[in-house]
Length: 468
Image (tube, rainbow, N blue to C red; front, side, top):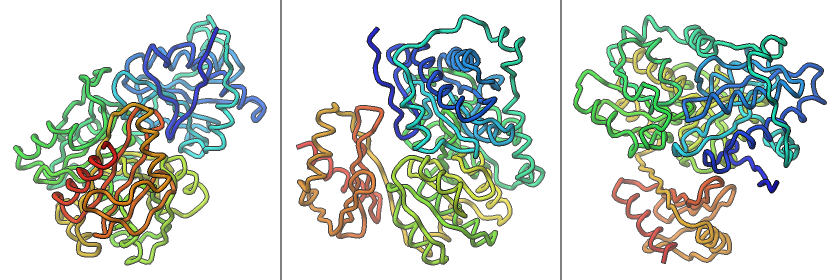
């Protein structure tokens, strides 16, 4: 049998269902995980769960069966779960590792396999590489049922959503939030967060909070272009003052203000720093991925908070959060963690924190953003994903790395950074970044300007230059 090498990308292994993401390949990865765990622990325990994607239960039970057959006890989540539920569960239940069957925000044809560490966040890059190196080319497929492993005491089912909801009740005053003058709308994007807001904020307006494994054909990524129904709902319902959206596995966040305007991850990171430091008096380092706005540095300088920039991938931020005192850690893609919670992205937790800020201050999201702009100035960010063949994608990145772009149309630059991707600091104070996806045939083009018109003009000039 000829088997492909399985590679973990920025956030887990992802592949197209039935093409490369198969029961057999899930078994191979699970065998590698078992082989990595057994020398480390006398009685290893792994928490396994799946989100709402097609085949989730089948793939989770496949992983569980292989782990059990190789001497690893499994705690199997009962029903679909979010990634933060697994991370919290690993920590609370004392498991040695967590497995989430999810492709996060990827298109519905994909599924994936994420690894979570005992600290309650993504496994470290070193541990992921070690598991990857142990994935065999061939694996024996166990024939025993889940019921068999339960009888043998090798598998237990756990109610992770209940554990997570009770944890949130300890962290937030829901009596206060349910009396908030600001009504919330929540879009689960047919993802794994769909039950949580329903349980905690019963008066919230719910959008796409039903099970649809194909997400109605839409990639469940909380970007403005994918959330038009939520935006319209807010714009046409005056009592709704905040819109919260989370992705397929509910670890990423998108927000809307009271006018139905999108509030992106850069602004959410800034708002969380502002809330936790100015309003709650909390301190700590701020850790951001390379693609996050430099306005974070400006806000942190104002507040006297240190900043660290990492490669893209929340696992790098989480690793720092485990060892350092971190106030906020965040990515441009909407994955944000905050002090006082687990070192994990959690769209629902972040959304509740900002809903709490609004409720306590009596200020709208728009007014709170204005407070931040008074310190750092206004800016507009956007990202275009160019779906192009891998050869073309790699050629553009190579040309950029070799200094082949002297300018982008009318926009010149004075400085280049290459922490992860290639970032050009423009003469006008904005920036451009080029970065190739590690999991899909696409090139991401990032830009920030001083207005919406300028940002769109920058993007147009960049695309015209690199695609010429």
